[in-house]
Amino acid sequence: MNISAEVDPQKRLQLAGDAQRYLLDNAYVIPIFEEPQVFAGAPWLKGVNFEAVGRPSFYGAWIEKH
Picture 1 (tube, rainbow, N blue to C red):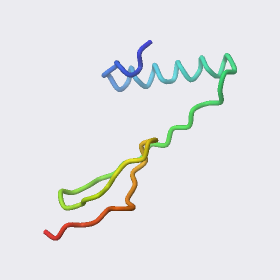
Picture 2: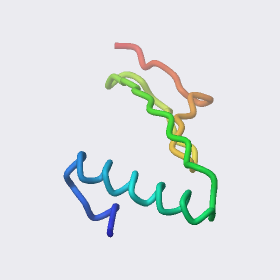
Picture 3: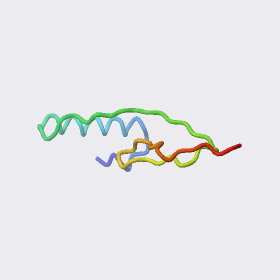
Picture 4: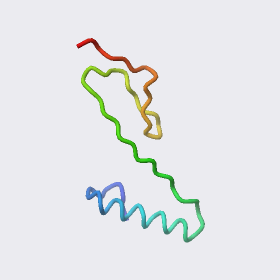
């Protein structure tokens, strides 16, 4: 099982679910929380960065005059 190498989104979802069930069944961890989010940008939006966990950081964001 190599989730990171799978390119098919449906297969990735299935593999991730299988891994989560395995971990839960064997009581190694609590279930993983996944928070789907959608973001959009534009060429004039500058300074957006991402935190280590993948959340966007708008702290230094600014809009370039266009």
